[in-house]
Image 1: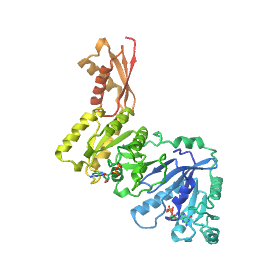
Image 2: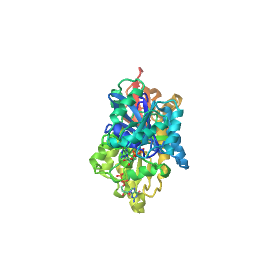
Image 3: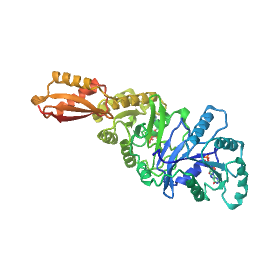
Image 4: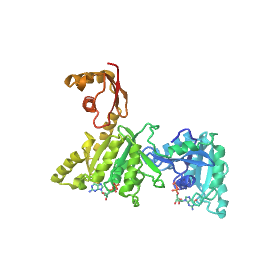
Length: 443
Ligand code: GDP
Ligand code: GDP
């Protein structure tokens, strides 16, 4: 999501209709939704536009006057969002009138140097308009009556909002571009795709991963096309889980067919740095699992394999599944394999460290001195055929590790695989993809 777009923050105490208003404004045009559970409870950011002007829209999740740690955090985050805003939409429930909590929010808003548009919500018909003048007492200008639920007055509200936006012109193209989860790393976060056939336990695992203490979740309405990502804080830094909409929903609809999940999985793998391939161990390694793994591998995405529902297997069956794994997914090489039970939580704690390790490997940077040294030893142990010699090598890029070798003449692929194995071992690259390019240099 472009951070250049002006930021509109929806503020107000809980239940006044903030999220209803956000949905009303974006309609079906939700582009990208980023949720940060734990960090900014329910903070939802979307892109929206009105009359060709694009802006970012944030629902802060509200102010809590309760005394809990979480309440305090939420309020802090909301206050922070307000300070970053270009314009604040301050929503009050006019059917209730001004409460102490509203007054507290108003006080904070008056203290920051940000334009505030006062929104009197739940004015569902003209008869309710009479009461809104009470809101003048908040000291934030004239209230704008709307019904977020029915759409009444929201067009006028958006007109007023536009007047307050910094002049940025139309940014439609940009909005269009970021509407596709294209895996760009602009946010600097590592992206993980959780994939697998229907019913293998992806949602169960995801919900367990995001953790009990961050369990405040917020599902955005979305069409199948729209994707929802979730950022989860881990000891090794924040991780962006790609396309988590389906995993959040408690009762999912039947879009969860094999075909659909395959298409979805591949799309999210394209947007990911690592794929978490979840397999239902009770069914062994199926043909579908195999196909999915092949496609992920083909996309050059490192894989962590999860054998889920492990607690349901007896010892014999466990051996059997591990054997199948070696047979049917051998091409994944040394990909980490985790045996766990998403349902009971057993073994789940090993997942984030395993992801972390894979990511470290993905980002590995090897000094040229070491590359050259391994090349020398490899060729000593086993020289390249036909008198070819690799004279020099260096790591040209990370993510994934990419090496450029300079050779006296053509080096056969079998020899390059040997070199790759050496690199993998010596540089501890695990199962992440490794790319090797060869340049010819006059002998
Ligand atoms: P939030 O806590 O500010 O996000 O509030 P919500 O958007 O979840 O809305 C709280 C409740 O108010 C929900 O039951 C909504 O359906 C209802 N609500 C929101 N906007 C309106 C409105 O314009 N009119 C009426 N009558 N109810 C509304
Ligand atoms: P998804 O379609 O891949 O997201 O799968 P779900 O998370 O919806 O899980 C499908 C079913 O498998 C549900 O009934 C879960 O309760 C069950 N399930 C998930 N993980 C486990 C597990 O580790 N052990 C057992 N016994 N059942 C599990």
